[in-house]
Amino acid sequence: MKDRRVPVADDAVRLAVGPGPSQKYPEFGDPRPGPARKGQEILKFLGMVIVYYSSNSFVILTNKQLVSHMGFNFPITLTCMHMTTIVLFSSLIIDVLRAFEKQAVASEKQRRSIRWLAIQFAVSLICGNWSLRFIDVSYMEMVGATTPFFVCILGFVFFGTLYSNRVYASCVVIVGGGFLSTYGKASGGKGFTVIGLVLLLAATFFRGLKTVWQGHLLQGEEKLSSPNLLRYMAADAAVILFALALVLEGRGLLAWLRSDESSGYPFWQLAALLVVNPMSAYCANYSQFVLIQHSSALTFQVIGNTKGILNVICSMFIFGDFVNPTAAAGYATTLLGVAWYIQEKRRSQ
Image (cartoon, rainbow, N blue to C red; front, side, top):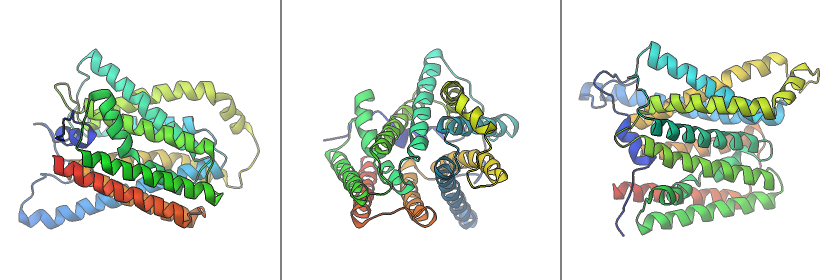
């Protein structure tokens, strides 16, 4: 079967991230450097990979620390802080430093699409952060690796996107690995609850939906570049999350602030983490954009998978996550399926 595809984020990010006439590349300069600069460009790219690894892992691990160990049981408020920080830093880079060309929303239809994307993004992050109260970071990464399956299914449902039979076969392997990981964690008796699984599946579902919808906004006549789309999306998400946090977590947050109960950590450590954690969230998003801009979305998927392995290892050392052989085999199966998925997607382009 030949692919009949509407581009999703895998394809469309690369269509939109190239600089316009007045844009400059903020990190690496011309994406086609001469031989004399090639080594320097490779070093800068590797440096940005390190920034992505460190900032992304720091955000996930500190989310777990805040929600599960330091008593900050307010996932909506935490996610709102992430979105607000993204808006502030995006405005700094686009409006003040002018590293990217500023784009306005072209139509009311595009505005509605961005608002819908913001809702998907917000729900995905809320469910992901909330799930950390009930599950291990390692299991979160295992289920999160199944995102390509949701991208394939939701791409077909919303935009009629079709891929080759081999792509769908790789999705079967991905899902099979996810089931095996779940069985391993459930039988292990630690770091797994049904509530956590439901929240994690919801987070992964909406992450896949966001990927598909984001690709729709990053291509076509009214396409937006990734930095502008990130800013508009984060601004809408911040407003939505602030309203939800006010209604659902407002009283609890005020009571927590007035409480003298100690979580066993000095207040300055908690306050510092609540400042650094959202800043790291922006670094993770920005480095993700730069890496895709200077390689490809598929290359970034490979980078993301290795990041997941790093987070699993770190969670085992830092939080004592238990990963039995069955769960590890399931995760390995999922990663093999994702590698096959990437290979088939590259072949179809």
